[in-house]
Image (cartoon, rainbow, N blue to C red; front, side, top):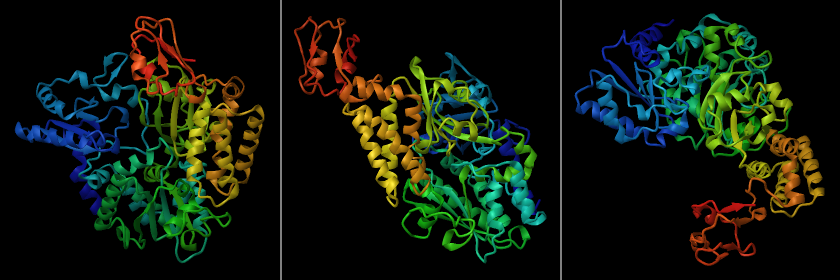
Length: 619
């Protein structure tokens, strides 16, 4: 270890071990209160909570006993702001500024604020380590992210062995040795198709060129996905170190992080980390006294989903329009500015330093034969515990949805899960016990993708759900190739025809034929995968399509043109429904059953929401 790393590690190790393990032996204060500083909690005013806690501690003269730190994302985003108290290991949820006085008061007594604790099955869980959402996870890509102080990310990262892998690589390993470790680990790309990472590096390394580039794809645009954003916000140095290691392995001296401009907090923390690393000599000329030099910068994307495709991404960095190009040539041969380039996404890179430090066998021992390591998912939709989860490959969908996600809210029934975002497919209840790996998901007509995981319940119309994703890909198409530009528009038109009750069974055949054509003939991955939500719902929920066409019925009551509101015999004639109806479609006499005129009704649902007796139902 270099002298610089050793000094930083010794300076900050005790404090970060207290935050991570509750180990008080190396510090001179009693308690550490950590406040989540991720975007989710920040949007719920976690910064105000942190400031108030600091104010209360100062007012009580407790600065020598209690330390307050803003840290990275805890994952349980639905219950933010999250506050973790050590050494009690108590996790408080939905904390407000008004709760801060009580938290400090109870802490002085050695007691907990029970109402703020996480609850399972109606009971408070006193320790974070006992919460099902937390205890079943295995952190690799997100390792230590929730314990590093946002005021001192570099020091804490180094204290937890940060930059040791880069030091080891540039001073004691050859390029081929580095690539071999990554290949032997079995790491595959976490951003889409799952291409072997070591192979990608090797293909670029063997190309002889005076200039090569390393690119981090942080253009996370899937609806409901926020894995990469969270990793960058919580642990930007893991990405910086990994890109430098890749640069050494392939012979590149420059790198770019292509980051969504909609991620201002991630951009701020990443730029600060790049500046820190450069000032410390971990980036720049002759890193760790070696002959290796590496520079890193950020390029901001304007939010085009198609720029997640590697060739479109490179054109955008160059200042051109974000459109994909034909392959070959592949980026390994002719990439950014015509130079050989490696493109990895954020989560892929977040694994690199740990693989170098712990060895290929360690990483290879996690997961399945086909899919090694862990995967980070953004678990969202109709699930109790939505947020970020990281689990070994091979974990079943049921384990994620029910054991970690806590099941479906309000006693509703699970219907499906959309895996892989707009490029993925819907997986029904019959396949809940499918292990999550690349092959299993592909066999079901879905894909791993970047890790979006949207759960839907019985109140979801699968035709409307597929239409939502088609609207997204239609809007995000760059328009370069006809199959995607025109084909997705035609697919969407047929879906709108079905949901409005105007389609025929012939339209269903046309829909399937068109989806397969777009899938086979589009230029890039966006177009090739855009029909997946439709094809998967046709495969598993075809009966709903048929009901819409033949019976003019939407069983979930979502498609308005097929929805009928009816007043049942429960009506007591209170007239509340008629008073809120915006078009005067409801009439009747007081204390007698009211009626709805279906010709006037605009299906706004105000009557159903207003009725206190459950007398208005959808048909």
